[in-house]
Length: 105
Image 1 (cartoon, rainbow, N blue to C red):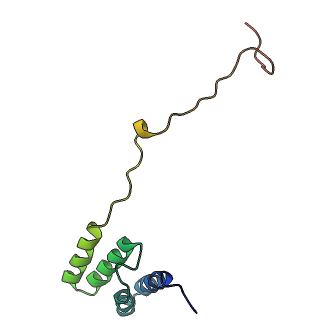
Image 2: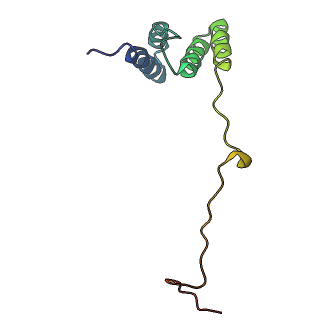
Image 3: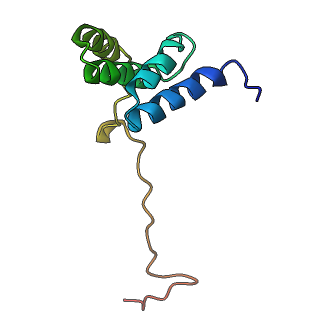
């Protein structure tokens, strides 16, 4: 099966995670080793999985390196605060005029 160059690292990451989930840490580590950090968009996932595999294999130094790389990743955008949200448009109801069901006062 042919995959575009951008899809191959993502497929390898998926294989690495599947191997991790079934407890095959050696296969997961092997799949992770194929993935270039610059070739994949979701580096945070790559570094997290590398860290978890290394940790479960007992390689504390490799786990630490991976988790340090994870910590350096760009943080997600902050949620909007109430003052930065666009104004809310509120519907108002008329008390008289065509189509009004309220009785005149």
